[in-house]
Length: 592
Image (cartoon, rainbow, N blue to C red):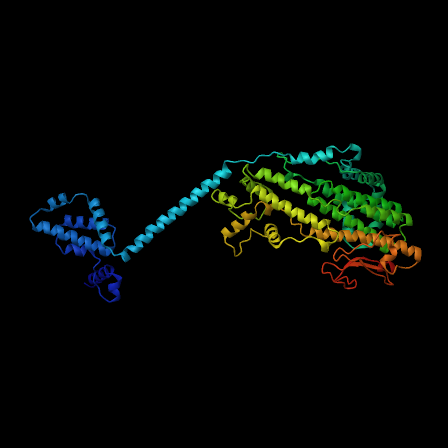
C-alpha cells in the first residue's frame, strides 16, 4: 500500500509544472494519459490520441491540451453512436493531422512565447550563413594556392658561380687550400703529435689570454715544434695561396640548385685548421725570435679574412670579422709583451698591411639578397601569392617556431592569405638589408641612420617574435602574428648587432695602427708620446676617431705604459676604466 502510494506521488510530481510545485500545488496537469483517461475512450482511440499528441512535438502542456481536444472530439463521436472502427477510419493520416495541429498551436502562442523559436531559427540561419561564407572563402582562397605552382626563372647558383669561373686559375686560392688538412695528415711525425691533436690546442690557446706571445707551455712542446718543422713547406704554400686575388671556389647545392641548400664548407676550414695553423706558426715565430716569419703569418691571416669574403653572405662576413679580430689582437699582444720583437722595417710593413686591410672588406650583403630572391621564386606563385610549398620548405629545414597546425589542409588557405605578397616581402627584405648596410658604412657608429619608429617595430616583429610559445596569446592570434610575417620571420637574419661589431673591429684595427705608431715614436724619442697628435703625420696619417662619439680615440700616457680606449656605447668617458670604457690596448704589461 505504501509503495503504491509513493509511486503515485512520484508520478504526480513528475507530471506537475515547476511553477505549480513552487506554489506547493501537485496538479499533475502535464499527464496526457490521465487527461485522455478522463474521457473513457476505448483503448485503440486512447492510443491514437496519445500518438498524435506526441507527434506534434509541442511543449508538454500544449500536448496535454491537444490530447484533451482530440479525446473530447472522439468522445462526441462515440456519443453520437459511431463505432471506434469508424472513427479510426475517418481520422486519416496521423502525421498530417499532427503537422496541422502543431501549426495551429504555434500560431496561438503569444509573441513572447514564440521568441525562443525565433532565436533558435535565427541562430541556425546565422550559423549556416557563417559556415557557408567560411566554406566559400576557403574554396576561393584555396583555389589561389592549390592550382598555382612556383616558377623558377633564375639560376642564382649559376650566377654566383659565374663570378668564380671567370677568374684565371693562377689567381685562385681554391682548391689549393682545400688540400691542406690532408697534406698535414700525411706528415710522418715521430713525436706523437698530429693535426687533429695540436691544432685544436692552438685554437684553445687563442681563446685564452695573450700569454702565448711570450711563450706558453704549448709552444715549448716538442711535438708542436716537430709538427711545424715538417709542415713548413705546407705553411709556405698556405701563405702563397692566401695572397692570391680570389678564392675561386665553385659552390655546390642540392638537386634543386637552391641557394638555401648551399654548404659553405670552406668557412669552417678558414676559421678552423688554416687559422690555427698560421696562429701556431706565429706563436713559434715569436718564441724563436723570427720577426719576418711572424709578419708573413700575419699577412697570410689577413689574406684568409679577405678570401673568406668571396661571397657576400652574412656568415662569410662574420667569419672574416673573427679572423681579422684574431689577427689584430695578436699584433697588439706582441707589441705589449715583446715590444722589441719587430724591427723598424717590420713595423712599417705591419702598418702598411693594416692600413690596406678594410675591415669587413665589403659591407654589401648582395648574396644574402639573392638568397631570399631564390627562396621567393620557389615558394610564391605567378600571382605573387605565397604557396603551401613555403610550409614544406621550413619543415624540411627543421625550423622550430612554426605554430602547430597552421599548415594543415583546413587552415593553410586562410594563413597564406594573410602573408605578405612576393613584392611586399622583397621590399621588406631589401629595406632591412639596406638599413644594416648603411649602419656598417657610416664613418662613425653615432652617425648611423635611424629607422622610423613604425618601420623599426615592423622589423622587430618579424625578427624577434617567438611564435611557437603557448603564452597568453590564443592560437588564432599566434596564427595571425606568424602568418603576417611569414616567410620573412623564418629567413630574415637578426643582424642588428653586426654593425656594432664592425665598428668595434675597425677601432681595434685603428688601435693596432696607433700601437705600432707609438712604438715607433718611443724608439725615436726614448719615451711615450704625450698625446696622439705627436704621431701625425710621420707615423699616422691622422688620429683615428672613436666610433661611438666621433671624437679622437682616447689616450693616456701613463708611466707604466700607454692606454688606448674608447668611451664605449654609453658615450661616457670614464678615464679608461676597463669596467666602463672599451679598452683597446693597454701596454702596462710591457713594463712588468
